[in-house]
Every structure is written in structure tokens, then in C-alpha cells.
Image 1 (tube, protein in one colour):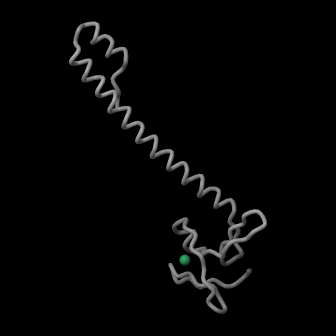
Image 2: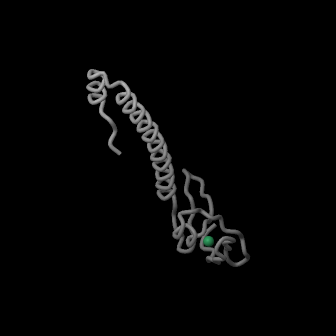
Image 3: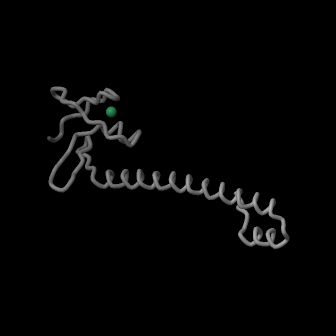
Length: 113
Ligand SMILES: [Zn+2]
């Protein structure tokens, strides 16, 4: 979207074309609001990408499931299938000899605790 320029608006005012100038000012305001909304959306996107990237950096794979390492603490396990497909960390449930993902019914081996 091309926004009206300040210079054009000044020219219009110099010519006494106040109605046209006013229209251009309105267009400029609308453009500013649209840019603000776009900026907000982009900020939200950057935030979620940063979070996803940080999570990815903290994940380890034990050959069957993911674990989230935060300092010295270890969270998990989480479903490898769900994370690889959707980027979502789905906690696995204890299912006797294996883990169980309630989301995709995956039954990964218990490699670690
Ligand atoms: Zn799953």
C-alpha cells in the first residue's frame, strides 16, 4: 500500500486544496493504523518463533522420546511424533513397559527416566 507523502499533502494545502489534503491525511492515518496492526502481528510471530527456537535448543532425544533440559532439571518425556509433526510438546504418560502419547497413541520405548 502506497501511503500519501507529507510533501504531497503540504503541496495540496499550499494550493488551498484543503478537502483533498484532508482526504490524504485520513489515508495516512488509516495507513498508520494498518501498519501498527501489522507490526503487532509480526511482533507476536517473532515472539512465538523465539520461544520455539529456545525450546528446540533445550530438547534432547533419547532415541524414542524428547526431554526438555532446563539447567540441571529434566522435563518429560514428550512425544517425538507429535513434536516433529506439529512442534507441540505432548507429555507422555506412563504405560507400563512403554510411554503412551494420548494425542497420537504413540507407544515409545522407555529409554530413560
Ligand atoms: Zn504423540
